[in-house]
View 1 (cartoon, rainbow, N blue to C red):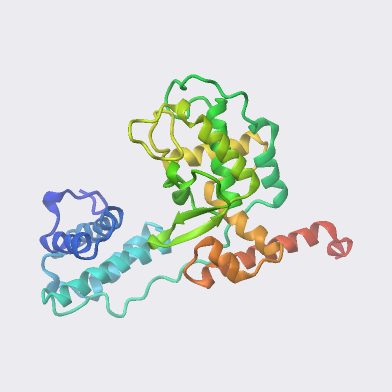
View 2: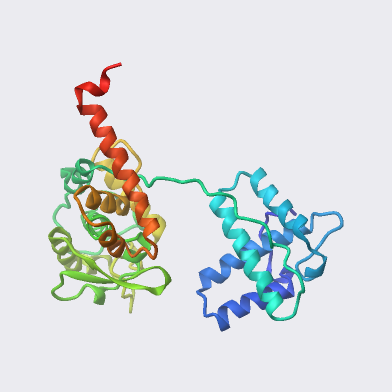
Length: 331
């Protein structure tokens, strides 16, 4: 079996299982976080099994820097993203730190191994005109909302009026309020009930913040709340955004629907949900908003994360200059 193949619980090293139980019970980490640590450690364990002689995470004293370096080299060979390699190394560091604290190991083979230097990527954003086209295109205007529940599989009919209304409401929250797609899809009906100018959002790390609602967002939310029942919510389903089967809208389906809105509006590029949040930040900074205010609106823990958008704004300003200024084309 390839060392990249998924391992089963039966093949999980006992020390890894103990570490994951520590994360879940003592650290109260989310199931998704625990699963991510487990996947990284099992991948390293499977890699160790291919070495000569084979090694195991259940015998940490037999491990040294060479095995960790070999693991990183294999990830390089597979052309995995540097951010992914850094995350896997962080999982290994956390695991060996746990073993040291519990007296289950005396050395840490990750010591002295630095994360690969991450590429500096500038977030992609739409310009203001493109955002206007996306949200106000006649092709995306919902038709008369029917009175009967929608039929068929989730998302099959891209022209269905109630689904278009749902998608536009979601897009307006992503752009107008700068929400992450995970934040928007985790909203419940009670979160937006009643008169509202702001929205309480649960962001990364369980941090709450207030997101401001634009007038179009408030109008779309009112219309969507009035039409939500058409998708026949499952009993006790509290999700604000529903799929066709009446359950909480899935992230992948939301991404597909946002891309569909962009196509219906005639935009040439592929548009994903996070691009709308990028556009929110970029357009605020272009309009003169204070960097720290944008940091607060985005829910960023560090100002350096928000500063990426200043580079984006400068790029767009430069492109505007190159396209419009007569002297920019003089050679």
